[in-house]
Length: 426
Image 1 (cartoon, helix red, strand yellow):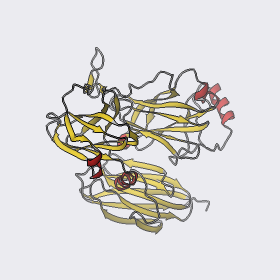
Image 2 (tube, rainbow, N blue to C red):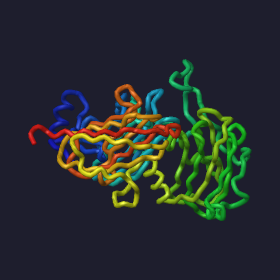
Image 3 (cartoon, rainbow, N blue to C red):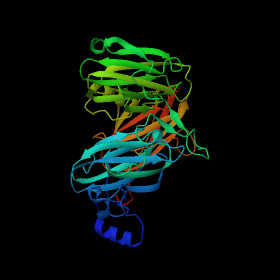
Image 4 (cartoon, helix red, strand yellow):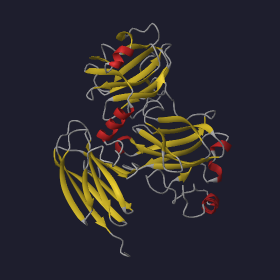
């Protein structure tokens, strides 16, 4: 990370004033400059020296934007990062190192709609970006601490609390499913160890959640796995338990309203159970799939959905718009969650305004990436409409823009307009 001015001097001034230190010169993984030292100053934001978790309370996350918390480590250790949204919010966190590389990201591992991740880190400076799922605005408490410090989120507890935006006066209500214990009734996926089925593409079953809330499977040898539950109309939420009923992971809303969990490191041989519930209609059929994790296939799905930028080496299709003129307009047919990608070149430093506007049957979402694949900006629903808009300051170089529909139900035409503004001094 680079500071354009002395962080220590800025910290002394703002700490004296009793306000958190804003580090305007820090670049957070391509998200942009700025952020708040989570301990109030750079010196007080060393997690290794903290006696408890450092927390930013009631942070406002703007629609289409991020709240950025900065911290440092003076020695290697495993730390916990968290975001606990206020009722009605759904947070996503991304942790970046000093080079701008993404270390870890999480959506719902804090329990319910909260975010949480534990990861080992080396000494250095880091930034934690918190945004709303789908670009929505929210208010959240953000925390970074050692594993021995008290957590602010519930964690993987097998469910979440509350029944919407309103909590009852006598305390929160647990909403979830019971752990899948050895004697819990469940439908088997496969007649034995899954290895032969995984070699043929995986195991799957389709049932209503009300009829089949649990599935079991057995691994005869360690395997990396991808586990999915698909039918956005049912809005499935999945949980993975080991053979004794310990919750290993949970997920809601991976790419639209479907759910997915990836175990990129092999799960040990043994028995496992998938628990599933519906956030919408439990009487609709949901397809559950267990497949061997394939890194390239997983990356291709991220590229196809616009969640991550593909390499600009021609291995993934995109429309090359070339150097951007002062103003350009083009239309694109965008089918559901299948992103259309556009590459362009900024010939000089300046401000770029990007609009994605419905022509027919569309609710566009757009994301801008640099040539290294770092997300610069994201937007959904700008200016009180379903259209999207980005206004970003860019240096000369190559960039990628993804355009995708909010849900599979939209299949229409989106108009992409760009306006480039050059500083008056140039």
